[in-house]
Amino acid sequence: MKKQIAILGATGSIGTQALQVVEEHPDLYEVYALTANNKVDLLAEQARKFRPEAVVIANEDKYSQLKEALSDMPVKVYAGTDALCQIVESQPIDIVLTAMVGYAGLRPTINAIKAGKTIALANKETLVVAGELINRLAGERHTPILPVDSEHSAVFQCLEMNNPVHKIILTASGGPFRTYTLEQLKTVTKAQALKHPNWHMGAKITIDSASMMNKGFEVMEAKWLFGVRPDQIEVVVHPQSVIHSMVEFEDGAVKAQLGVPDMRLPIQYAFSYPKRVHLSGERLDFSKYDTLTFEKPDTTRFRNLALAYEALHQGGNMPCIVNAANEVVVAAFLSDRISFLGMSDVIEKAMTRVPFIRTPDYADYVETDAETRRIAAELVINGVK
Image 1 (cartoon, rainbow, N blue to C red):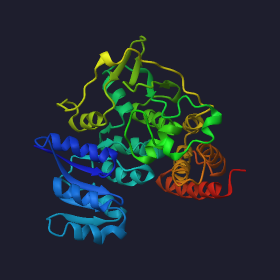
Image 2 (cartoon, rainbow, N blue to C red):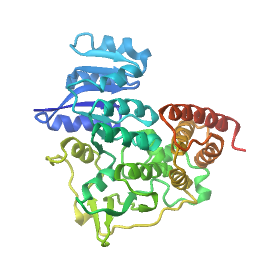
Image 3 (cartoon, rainbow, N blue to C red):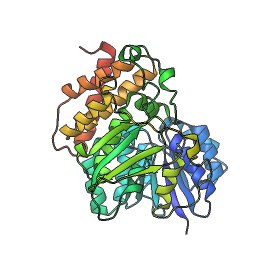
Image 4 (cartoon, rainbow, N blue to C red):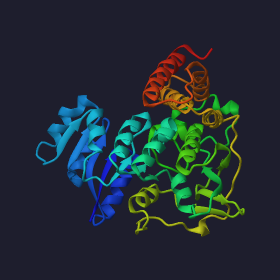
């Protein structure tokens, strides 16, 4: 029986690679639903190729265009956030791949968990914003959450039954500015920031990687995925991106998961777990690597990582504040309205201005997100004072 898969964010980097996995294994996987935010043409092209039961365009203004593009096909076409959140509840769906970008992934993920779907989690912001809520719901519904981020998939693959983790070691490439001085970082451009040395990703996550906020989010995500304390999560810079992450056990033994930088591997593992199936493409050739290097991250130059740890220690709605402020400043940086280092200034100031809630519920997260975006947008316009 083929697994029926819904891909949220089908036109993004993770979504398109997930479809490559489906295409390689038509005997194992079938696409039930595809969703996108704005990219009508690509979504229509994907629908024609993979013939899902339904497609959803989140931007309702694009509905007519998508409906017309697929008018000759027997596919249900929907639009809007409500439709997106409802489609994940469809009875035939086995796995929901949450590959949407940012806070927008939270609500549909909650709906999918409540519907008892296996979650292939690529939207790290879901756990960053509301990790405690998500874990509680998943526990109540006995819903598996399988990590798709390469680092968390690596940790997941290294875990041992009945052997508790002493420490999780998340590797970071260091991004395009790993060797830049603080003075050099003052004038870097979005074009430079978008040139990641190892990975091909969407614009938002590429900027987050350059600022190391992405690694900060991964620290938060690791806490909720693996049930560890913040002080049990270490970040180490590993420029070659061969070791995707490691686990240290109580006896000091360290297990690592290695591979080429190819997101199809963690995507496919989430789909096939607990089995492994063949994946075409490049394999790791150790003869090409005469040196693997490691170094500590510099949180003076890359303050976002320190801010993420601070938010995780504070808990409550503070990670939600950091995420919302970061989404605002990344958009501002990509539109040349703020400097690279200015992003951290706004995030830090937002952490002090948005009301702190120690035990938030879902409504509190929604209110916190909206208030943070308002304050962060004002800080971008008026400057940090």
